Length: 327
Length: 191
Image (cartoon, rainbow over all chains, first blue to last red; front, side, top):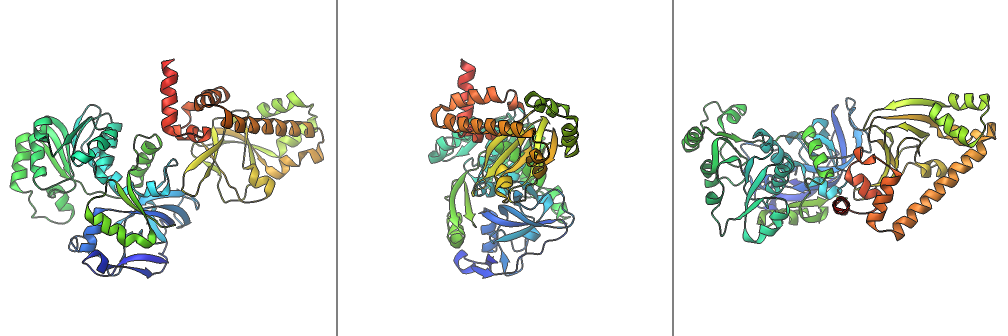
C-alpha cells in the first residue's frame, strides 16, 4: 500500500516521501481500517522536525499521523464490538501510528463508530484535538456554571474545548486575535477577548478552570486569574510531578515558580497527556450528532499533496484542522 | 404475534392452516438498542414487522454521511426491499434506535406465501399499494411542501418519535439540515 513516511528528521520537504509498504498486521484486538481521511496535528510537525526524539523515538522510516476515519475491512479474532463495514474514527495509539496510508490497524480500545451526520473528512479532524479538549476539561471536573478560560479559542484544541465546555453549561472566556473574534463567538464562547486590544487578566478573575493551550508565561499567569482552589490544566506547560513519575522521572520537580503559585492559590496544576480512548470518542460522537460540537476544517488536501499540507501546518496559519483525503 | 395476525385479519379471512403457517415461518424477537439487523453490502434475507420500539433504515453516501430512508414503529414493516427484489447486496443499513420487538420472517418465505395460501394475495397487494401511495406522497411532499410543513406531517405520521431519534435522523429523513430543524422547532414553539 502507499504511505507517506518520515525517512529522516529535519525540514518537512527533505524528510517526507511516499513509499510502497506492507499492509499492517491485524492483531487479535485490532480492526483494520481502510482509511478515507486522516488529519495532521502540531505533534506530527514536531516529530518531523525531530523535536520529540527523546520522548517519542520512532524507527525510520515510519508512516506518519494519528487521526483517522474510515471503514472496518477486517477484524482480529477477539473483536466483537465492531463488524466489517462499520464506519469508524480514532486517534490511533503511538505504537500503531501511521494514518497517512491506505490502511491502518488499530486496537479497538481506541476506536469508536464515526458520527453519522458528518463526512469522513470532518470525522478525521476530531480525535486528537477532541480527546485533548475532553480529557483536559474532564480532569478539571468541568460542570454547569463554571467559569472557564480557554486560551487560543481559534486553535484546533481551543475551538473544540469551547464547544465541549458550552455543552457542559460552563461560562466560557477565550482569547484570540482580532481577525478571529467573530468566528470564535460563533463557536459559543460567552466572552471573546481580543488579546491584541484587551488584557485578559483584567477581564477574567476567579475562574474555576484555566485551560492553558499556549504555555510560556501563560502557564504561570493562569494562577493570577484562577480562583482559590481552582484548577489549571495545561497541554503545553511543564509536566507535573505525578505525570513525570509515570514516565519514570523520579527526581522531577515542578518548577518552583509554578509550585509556589499553585500552593498560594491552593489550586491544582495538571499537565494533560492525551490518551487514545474509544469511549471518549463515543461521547464526542453523541455531542457531534446533537450538534453540540461541530468540526472545524481549515483545508482538505488530496493524499498526493500531503507534504504541502504539512508545510501549511508548519506556517501556523490554519484556522481549524488540516485534513488529508485518502480516497 | 397476535398484533400481526389481527392486522392481517382486518384485510382477509385467515384459515387456521394459514395462521399456523404464518406462525411457523416467523420468529418473535426482542432486539437490543443499537443492534444492526441489516448491514450495507451484505445479503438480505429477512423482513421485519415491528411490534414495539423504533427502527430506522438509512444509506451512507460516499462522504460517510447517513441519510434516513424510513423509520419503523409499531405496525410498520422494514427491510431493504431493493436488495430483496433485485437480489443484490444491501444498499441500506437497518438499526434499532430503541430496544425493539419484531416478528422476523425469511424474505423468500413471506414473499412466496401466496403460492401456498392464495388468500394472502390481496393482503400482499394491498400492502404494496399502500407502500406505493406512501412513497409517492413522500416524493410529492418533498417537491411541494415547505420544510415546516414536512416536519408537521412527519410528526403526525410518527407521533412521539422524537424521544427515540436524534435530530440528524429526522433532518436527513426530511431532506434539510439540523440547523433548519432547530429553527423550525423554535418557530413552532413561538406559535
